[in-house]
Length: 435
Ligand code: HAM
Image (cartoon, rainbow, N blue to C red):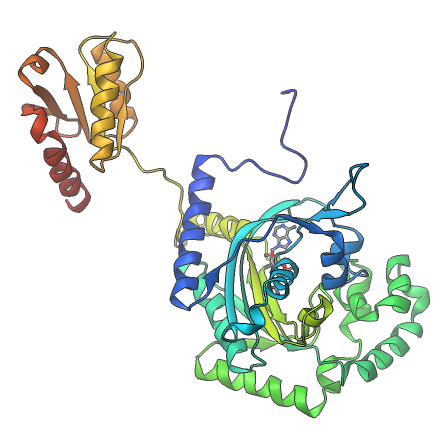
């Protein structure tokens, strides 16, 4: 047992996994760019109040899962690691006066989030999200743009069988009468409610619908549904989002129990689900409209909508899919091999190898120097194991400005002038790629 281990609920992404993540992130970035979402980076920690006020005090994310940073004795401010990026991005929108920019402001970020969750497969304490936000447009077209963008991400990275679940959770005009009906329903069953849910009944009854407690599944299944209580404006918006999605041929299923786990939502709420190998449903992403959030964080009333997609879960599902014979998808493991390894006949000449490799890299090649003081045979064996296509062998010809260029796959070798080396290698590397 090693003395030190990664903290519970966190993972080291070793090179294969890290490479898969980077490739998922590259697809995300490219897609966001094509849709006109501009990159934004906000701090990984914020004033805890940004999350408490934005996400809501009576939510699992704030009540149970917030990673609070113990305040230093000389600071009164209380900080927390971000459990999600939306509140921080909206804080930045207000702070930097983005309401004066052309609306909606389309923003995107990719990065690690932190929740003190109970760790299990696909649920971590540090996890990555691909997030997009469109702030400043009331919809419904932007709602459909965002949902379609999410669906396209799964298609482009090769996740199969993703389902779009959609709901409307109303707005401040229609939610109070719905909440009254919900409270009546739960009050009549108060004895069957676990302590957390009984506490929520008084403070935030909508959250009961989002309970992870297995005892609540049956009670929640027949609870009053918000779709039956929408005001005319919310019902109209919901219908319009659906018709936009239909026009974009985005299949979606209405899920009346979908309320999301964060308090800032209003109207459109959605999740992307996939059924895993064990038949277990996994939320690979989710989002919705948050028309009150900008105001809650000190700005003028401004509508907004966005989503967060869980890259850890997406990588997990892609891995399972490949194992069960499905499409491997983007980001299948495999770290690119070098084009060339520079070796030498003189076991002690590490300087020569480093200089030549440095020149080849400057010319744009993927070159590695063998940095060990070992015999030529050993150096060539290692180059083969690395998957390099070519080895450059430094030997006696160096005095005449020449080296041996060995094709490790074909097992052939020829003399090349140093001045031609980079060009020859580039030609060879591109032949390998296309051959
Ligand atoms: P969320 O549903 O809390 O929404 O998280 C979005 C996604 O992040 C989830 O669907 C899941 O894939 C992933 N995720 C959440 N928690 C974990 C965890 N502990 N381990 C692994 N993956 C996890 C939000 O965060 C909102 N900010 C989305 C949004 C953006 N709404 C509007 N704009």
